[in-house]
Amino acid sequence: MPKALNVGMIGYGFMGRAHSNAYRKVNQFFKLEYQPVLKACAARKEDKIKAFAENWGYESYETDWRKLVERDDIDLIDIGSPNNTHKEIVLAAAEAGKMILCEKPLAMNVAEAEEMVAAVERAGVPNMVWFNYRRVPAITLAKQLVDEGRIGKPFHYRALYLQDWTIAADVPQGGQALWRLDASVAGSGVTGDLLAHSIDTAEWLNGPIRRVCARTETFVKERVHAETGKVEPVNIDDACMFLAEFANGSLGTFESTRYARGRKNFNTFELNGDRGSLYFDLEDPQYLQYFKYADPKTGQKTEAHLTGWQKIHVTNFEHPYMDHWWVPGCTIGYEHTFINALADFLKGLETGTPAQPDFRSGLRTQKVCDAVLQSAREGRWVEIE
Ligand SMILES: NC(=O)c1ccc[n+]([C@@H]2O[C@H](COP(=O)([O-])OP(=O)(O)OC[C@H]3O[C@@H](n4cnc5c(N)ncnc54)[C@H](O)[C@@H]3O)[C@@H](O)[C@H]2O)c1
Image (tube, rainbow, N blue to C red; front, side, top):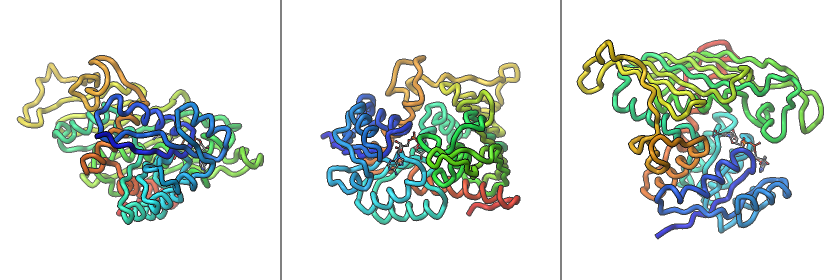
């Protein structure tokens, strides 16, 4: 029997749209007991949230998220609002017994994230952080290849997350999307916004990071604030580079910036082990590159004249998630990562095995982000507990 799951979506921006699309499509492509219903959405500007509700087919809307959280006809609260709103909404939603899906980064800092984990665990409500890149089929395939032992003993992990949209000094801070440049709303700059994704993927594929040594930079030191109209100091990190030691003994380098001219959403990683290597690039997301040096079961080396990188087009039915989509050779895109993630969350409700990453896993990423920022401030290596 299908079970209706009444969704209360907070925020109508980039993620409000990506998540709403996922709720509308998930049951068309995945066989699931739970069926999301677009019950209500919330944001402060009435004209905007009303138009959003009409466009996506929400039955109603609120102009205060607290009203949404108090409603008896809402089962799940989805947080697609800026980072400084996450904690307060999570505490209220957990208290009200709602399931919670929260955008990344989970919180502004570790202290907030710990409170949020305690709240959902105390209330016993299902929860997940939208680290959607885990659900890019090529990245899920990377995880499968690691688990199959195809990389062997890992030596190096190398991640880049590069953009170029804040180079102009006249880009303001504050307001829709630009809240990312205001540290009081975002918590941090590229570390929380972009590297949080890279860290989540890295720890998923290569295990926990033990310690980090970082350097950050703010290239444009003052910007007009869209809300006050005044020129104000910029307190976010525009760029962040850090070295990492993983608990498995491998070494990592991570780099992120919004000042890499020509790079739009260049999210890549490479993992090198004694049996093989993997490489992924989000701007070419259908492919996973794999170099096979030796077979994981027999240890037999690939014949020397046949060695080379394989560029695997991740669209076969045998590839992660792809049996839910089109025929082999036909690609899927960015929006499907949210649909895949939602399908996993709903399957988790059905089977009783919660989907990951849950808030506790999001806290782990937050710990690495905070350690990176602390290391940059103090100019030294910082251990992660
Ligand atoms: N998973 C991803 O890949 C990904 C991508 C982009 C953003 N995000 C995360 O999603 C969240 C939202 O980012 P976005 O890009 O959608 O931002 P956005 O600026 O496009 O949208 C933010 C929305 O939140 C609403 N909002 C702001 N303050 C509010 C409040 N007090 N109460 C209710 N609504 C409020 C705004 O009206 C707007 O609709 C952030 O945490 C961000 O880090 C994640």
